[in-house]
Every structure is written in structure tokens, then in C-alpha cells.
Length: 467
Image (cartoon, rainbow, N blue to C red):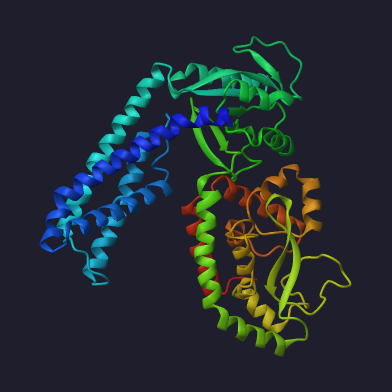
């Protein structure tokens, strides 16, 4: 825990400083532009203060969701400026638009809104440029550099270490190598010390306060990569994989260039603030009202199911949830009663005669998933996440893919990236194909991605493209 704080506290401090600059920028713009128009509109001093606080909270939440409070010393200033302008300008234009069509009245005229935006953006961006510039200065002085460990004492690992050393301005200091269990026995001129064996990697990360691990295995088969990642899992670090194995996990992770070397980046620590708290709060804020509003639909669907075929309205089945915890999933029954009695666990296929007439329509518009709101409210599922599987298939997949357990590190979802990119599972091959989408979601988990999935799911339901 102490090591995590040592690695992350400097980044947190930078994030809070940037937040302070934004508050200063917002207050200045509010005072110079907005306050005079509010006074003319008979807003009291207390009402003006409340409005300023609400506006600033809104900006802070929006910027946080768009990664504009990241404290890393290697943040691209150009990319940050571009994101800031895109986000703020889009919101300002939307405000002017809703005011123009009379959707709701804004107590500041359109020219005032744009003047506010120009002043706010100028001060906030200037502050960011100064902070990022000072960070670069500190990097050159050796302060705030990322302690980096190369996992793999071989030719590929040596090449990665050499590039990082040559491009020290990127902010990465290689502390040494970790010898992988399958490294070849060959003499190399070590650029950096060999700090230990693969089995000791967590202790090495802790002792040397490592924040980044470059994974450069000599034989980068997919099972070997994920076995190595599993050994590091839980440490407060980011893993960067040397690109020979790009095809193995293409689409699973973010890619960046360091010292001219393209690296695939994954973060084994999924315990982010968004994943721990915000996502759960959003689940409840959406699931509870939806559950209440859809109660009349529940009644209608229940009647149709009963009229269509004998059997219960709800279908219950054991699925595997977060951290391998089993739970009972609820769905509207879309198949005949005891559909798997003679076959055991099998996936449905497109022309499956076990699917009832009303069940086919429920599946087409994803209405059979509605009862899973109960699972979301209970905390067993999320609105968005990987599809929950049955224990039989989880055991089978874990034998074939040792890294499959990582898929169970987040709550399963009613909908998800894999569900909108790929149809319902029909066989084990479908599950294999969907794994890459699930891992992409896990590595890229964010509010923006969740929002994109929600909008895509709504379209699938409206267009009837479900199965």
C-alpha cells in the first residue's frame, strides 16, 4: 500500500493543482462575464455563488471523465489542449443551441457565453501549459521519472532497454531486468542489472518502487503473455508489451509510442475510482428508475409468455460473476420449458426450435434481458460489462485460456462491447471471438466507452438487430 502511494501521490498532486487552476479560470471568467448579466437578471449574491459552484462542479466532472486531470509527467500537451477545446466548445455550442430553440432559458446571452468560454479556456489552458512545461523541466532534472522494469533478459528486452536509455527525455528510467523463466541461456552485455527471477517480480516491483513494466518475452505466445501478466496482477503499475505479440491481443489494449518503439499498454490494476464507485452509482441511478417504469411492460410480457407456452415466466440460471462468485441470473423465458433436459449445457443457435414464438421476438429486441435489472440492483451485475457465462463453460474456457480469469475481474453486464459487436454465443468459437472485445472493454473501461455502448444498445433494441 505504501509503495502504491509513493508511485501515485505525485500524480495526484499534479491533478489537484490542475483542478485548482480550472477553478481559478472559472471564477475569473464568471466574474468578468457572467456576474454582470446575472445582476441585471436580479440574481442575489447567494444565488450567484451557488450557480458558480454548480458550473464549476459540472466542468470538473466532465474534465475528469475525459482524463483531463491525469498527473503523468509524460502527458502530451498538444493532445490535452485538443481534448480540452473539443469538449468545452461542444458543450458551449449545445448551450447556445438549446437556448436559441427555447428548450430552457439561460440567464446569459450567446455572446456572453462565448466570451466566458474564451476567458475560461485561455486561463485553464495557459495553466496546463505551464504545469506540463514545468513537469518536462523536472524530468530533465531527473525528478518525477517513471521507474521501469524490463521483464525478459533476452535480445528483445535488451533492445527495449537500450531505446528507453537513449531517449531518456521520455521520462523512463530502467532500473533493471527480470529474468523470465523461459529466457534463453546466453551471455549478454547487461545495460542494467538483473534484479531477480520471474517468481520474484512482485517483490522487485515493491522494493524498487516500479511504476512501469515492459514485457519483452522471448517466446510471446498468447498463453505465455497472459501468464506473465497474471503474475504481475495487483501491482500498482502499467504493463507495456513489446509489439511482436500485437496480433495476439489486437484490439485488447491501448497502444502508445515510447522512444520510437510502439508498445501495447495494459493496466492490470482495474480498481479505478470510476470502476469502484462511479460506475456502481450510475448503475443504481439508472436501474432503479428503469425497473419501476418498466413494471407495466413486465406484466404484458408475462401474459404473452404464459399464453405462448407452458412454463414459468422467469428463467433462472447460475452464472459466474465478479471474482468467480456464482449468482442466479434472471431473464424472461424465451425457450420451451426444460429446454436443456436431454442435451445438457448448449448454446442457442439461429434457427433453434427450442425458442418459442414470443421468445424469438423478445430476443430480437433484447427484451428478455429486462429482469437482469434485478441482478444490477443487487450488485451481481452492471448495466455494462462482459456477458456472464455458466460455470460449465467458464471452467472449459479457463483450461484453454489461463488469462480468462481477468475477464472475471469486473462485474458482468446486461450489455457490453462484445454484445454489440458480436451476436449471441452459439458455440465455443463465438466465445473465443468475443474475448478480444471483452478485454478491450476491460482495458479501456471509461464513462465515454460506457456511453457509446449504451447508445449502440438502444439502436440494437430499436432496430430489432438482436438474436
